[in-house]
Length: 317
Figure 1 (cartoon, one colour):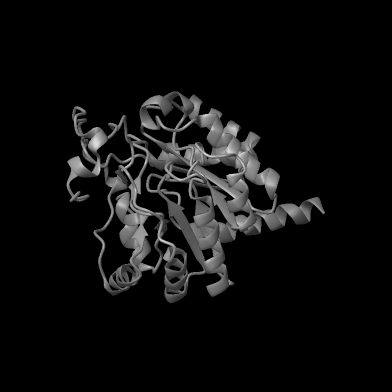
Figure 2 (tube, rainbow, N blue to C red):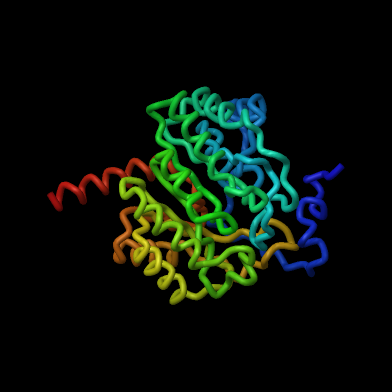
């Protein structure tokens, strides 16, 4: 029986790779250990509904803060991914069959937590004909039915190995935010995100806007993987050409010695510079800090994003 708590079984594709040093984190990257009653309550709701969270599976540094506020990012379609990205701590291998009751359990947990905004993500499911598009749509509809006032953000795979029309299945379910992360600059894709294609992911985001211009689009990258400033600025330009509304930039943190090594820790001042540059390029919303993650403060950020869009619309009118 496979034990996902054992690194060699969690990441069999990385087991024979040489170790990369894990440098000590600087003072600005450290966070408090998770705990407290609210944290325990959130964890209990996740367990009672047999739900997986990306907060735990990816080892997010903000899990303690978010869970203490009753926020958790739901990860649907299992805990095993068909891809083997070198930055990611989610287990790799052959996933289990889809659970038809999962959308309902997600909806129940969202209602129980009383969420104003929920982020729903997933593993990559290249084993499925539609890449999991219909399961995403069912989950969106279930949450809408149970919590009609809750805004919904999806963070999807790239649907690279299925028909392009599968994207329409997710868009037709009308999430409020469609997020798909580019993760890094194109030059690092072969070693960091080998199963993905940069321009396919970029086009995916562009197509969402073409299919439904009312849906906000969002994407993010990590820094500290070996990129330079020029390449980050080029990614910003590419995203704006695809009409992406919201950009996130965060520090890459190496999960284990077998994962992609940290090139450097980017300073808070550099992040502030990236934020300024991104707003200058026309993004409606930018989050660029060392601890920024796709789902970090997603609800507050969505409220600001919607306000920015309303201001822009009124100024045009």
